[in-house]
Length: 574
Image (cartoon, rainbow, N blue to C red; front, side, top):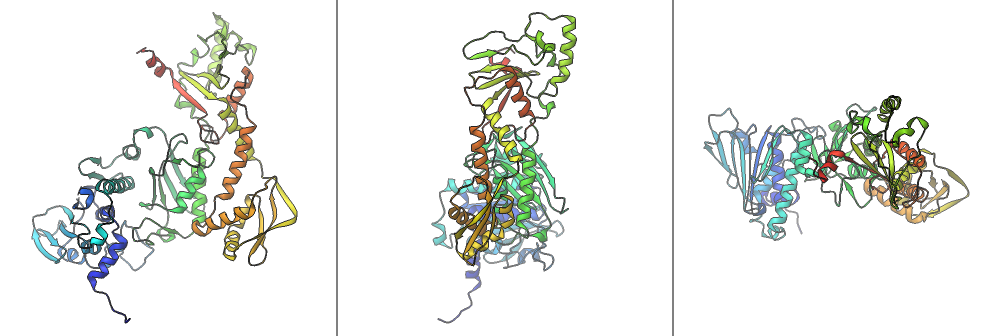
């Protein structure tokens, strides 16, 4: 068969197959163009999930007659002022969006650039341009999507499913630009110049309010590399990654390096089947990342992916590892003087009040009356309590939970979860014990698997594994972590698969976490175990000075803090 040059209309339809997968793709391309045009108000209206009509109106810079004519030409773009493909500072670029969309729909453009005496209107199918009374920004209407390609039309899902995809696109774009106002079908509204935390609440839901932790990190070795945003506290999670918003230089992406780093950061505070929430903005030199590797522009390639990954993991773990609580967050110094008063003094089968104290100076705590001398000692205790975020122990309930009072708050601590986290962190702080092998363990692998393993040999060495090539199709283990007896062939196959796909592997980290977590779980205070006052107090003091103290190794909460004002509401004490 001889070679033929395809006609332009067919070339555009083929390009549309890459760029325009569904109505949501059209919305994404058009809104990104509006953002690149400097718009700060964007209104999107769709009918029948975008199948019948998509309209995007913006108040951006608009186009002249000549620009409008060229906008529907293949590979025409205003996003690349030079010929440097790595120096891209805009949301869109590929130059195929408008002609591709026009090739599979009926598309109309109205625009005004503020300089011409009138606006311009174009029917894209005929490229006929006429003067119009359009007087601000640009409006693009896309009608009868895929009507010209019925084979594509039949693959669209139902209108509701397509609408859900459009909503997700608008949410991601709204998260990328809190300074811009977005409206979708007059139902989903995000005002411009919205505070980022308020935008997060508007997008993710009111349950995230006050439960997101701020991230603000800069690389010490690369001044252009920084990470900003918010991540959820470990007890706030979802059953899927739906509320993970990741951005690279302002562009919303679903990148395997970023997703892997996020998962690794939460490995010891959240179950692997659960997902944290985040809005993270990674900034770096545009020359260090290729944003033009996929038509949908949702994937990127980093010049140094391992460095990016380690930087993100450290930044997130530093936030998650902050000490227990900013004492100012719930310590009420006005109410601190009442901590030792009105203490319950009964004992029952399931509730024990401890009357044994840390020292004789506070033995008066459980007496009915206090003297002036006692009050002086009590005032001194107020100073001590400020350095004890979890407060003074009241007692133990059900032989599971420690009750304490801190300021105007009741504190409930899960004794097993608390001791489990303390034990785990102590184990993590110890160096991995290595076991040199008199006879190396030889694992047969494919040659490409050998190459993949050797590519992360330093990472494996940090995990206690000394692995070297043993010929072209095998590796030998010369040193391994003590007491690690694993199915090495299966593990190495899994690691090699991950390295080839993602450029890194989380298998070793997960194995180490699982081993330490299991040990910590089985060597910690159990639920049902009675503790005396000193033991409970020591547990609270230890957890106050432990990293990631809010959750156990499995992601369960360690403590709950209930303000007395909330308890008053239970009993209608308003």
